[in-house]
Amino acid sequence: MTEGSGSGPAQAAGSSPPRRPSLGEALVPLLAMAALLGFGYGWLGYPVEVLLLAAAAVAGAVAFRLGYRWKDMEAGIVAAIDKGMPAM
Image (cartoon, rainbow, N blue to C red; front, side, top):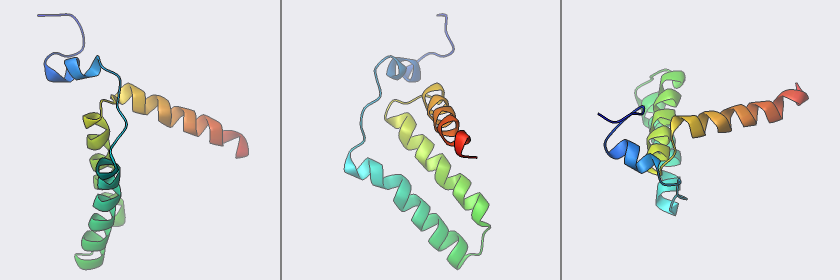
């Protein structure tokens, strides 16, 4: 067994830098959110919060497919919050 936090394709994909999304890949999270909110809230009446979490999961799956890992996303989230905090 090798050292590290994982093995297999996910670890091999993590060794290459993340790539930029194509137009279709960039639209997938937006279209998923629109579909989830339109159908889930508008038609079925599900709570918006649950649907937004599902849309965030789709966006995370797309990011993972592009080669981003949780540490990359976490660093971006923290940087965005740090940038906005002085205004509060």
